[in-house]
Amino acid sequence: MNNKLVRGTFFLTAATFISKILGFVYIIPFMNLVGDEGYALYKYAYGPYGLMISLSTMGLPLAVSKYVSKYNGLGNYRASQDLLKFGLFLMMVTGFIACATLYALAPTLAHFVVGRQDGSGNSIDDVVYVIRMVSFALLIIPTMSLLRGYFQGNQSMGPSALSTVIEQVVRVLFIVCGAYAVLTMFNGSITSAVGVATFGAVMGGGAGLLILVTVYQKRKHFIYKQVQNSRENKKIPIASMLKELLSYSIPFVIVGLAIPIYQNIDTFTINALFQSIGYTQEKAETVNAVIGLAQILVMIPVSLATAFGMSLLPSITTSYTKGEINNVKQKITQVLQLFFFLTLPAAVGLSLLAKPVYRMIFLSGSSYELGGFVLQWYAPMAILFGLFTITAAILQGINQQKKVIAGLLIGIILKLSLNIALLSSFKELTPILATYVGYGVSVLYNFHLIKKALSYRIIPELARMKISIVHVTFMGIVVFIMSKLLTVWLAGAVQDYTASVLTAILSAIAGAGIYMGCSFSNSEIRDLFKKPRRKVS
Image (tube, rainbow, N blue to C red):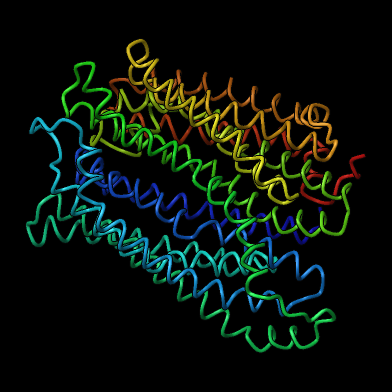
């Protein structure tokens, strides 16, 4: 893997990580403003919205990234520009259709998600209102996503990274300030505050799109000059372009829906399932909210894998198109090593510090005992989420995208079945255990496909990562002991919340210090960040 890819990967990773940090930092004040019931209502809006984003973009942003990378590698820069024009028009059309569809379906979705209304939770009208407020973001997000794919296909990660951060900053500020203004300045209801908060997606999307358009305008002269000097400046017919895009994008749609589908299975079934075993609507919504909050924290380390996947795809596609199979294997190995180096300690640390971290972040606005318990079990799921993202990106980069769908569908069927079958025995753990099984099967299937397509020796390559496992084990022991000692020492000396904050922060700092110290004293880890590894045969 060349230095350009490593830099691009970490640039996009940093932006995605910052975005994810912002994406849960705002939960602290927001939860204190609206509480469990308000957050559950917020989640009801964002669940179907996330699905509609994937459907409205039709997988085109990543398909465009692959298409642009392919034709740039062949020297045909005109094809990239023709695609951009066609893609932007298509995204505006599908965005409008998605917005209208979600707006119209809001009542149906509201009846489905609430379950049996017993007056102890959110009403149907409340859910309809927030879903319709967030639906307007679909007019903007598809276009913005396609532009990001275009820049990534050119292996220019900066515009996408900047756009990602700006979008999230504006969205978060609007959510917190808007909810605060409604509740404290205008004495509005929780429902009104949540509705305004969901509209933050519109404001953030607008800001992110503005950044991308501005960058493109500044680069337009260079881009047109590049097209004019193209050595293979051939026009691709619209029909051929669309056919090729759809061959890429349909699998991208389904793979892109993976995490949202799993999350929405929980969002839309938890209330009814838990009410069926005697929970009140209010208690079921608390479980729903807690699992949603745990997902937010777990998705932070997953964002590392997402960034790797997005930056990996154009490079793998280019190498695969040129027939450089050994180079493809080399890139796969290094990306997996980078993934485990960063994600494994984050997942383990989050699991060990689940209770103090959950209480520190979400304060008294949620059931922190239940939340800590759920997060403790959910945190390692970040590894499977991330591995699925990366392996799916690899398979898409080597034109095996259609085969990914089978493994994903098997996993989803297992998830749905186990959500019902395990409920009476495992209660709040049921959605988590079902997700482990579903994703685990999908990841194993993806690795099987990679091995078959590239003759890639997965087990020997994964064995190289044993040093990271040793370091994480040592880190985990230190974090566990320190958190227990701090819990004992701080008991009664300070308030419970302060004790949770100190335990979480000090234990995390100690663990991070131990892990980084061990890792960077190892020459193999240092080389991972300095230069390409030897080729994999």
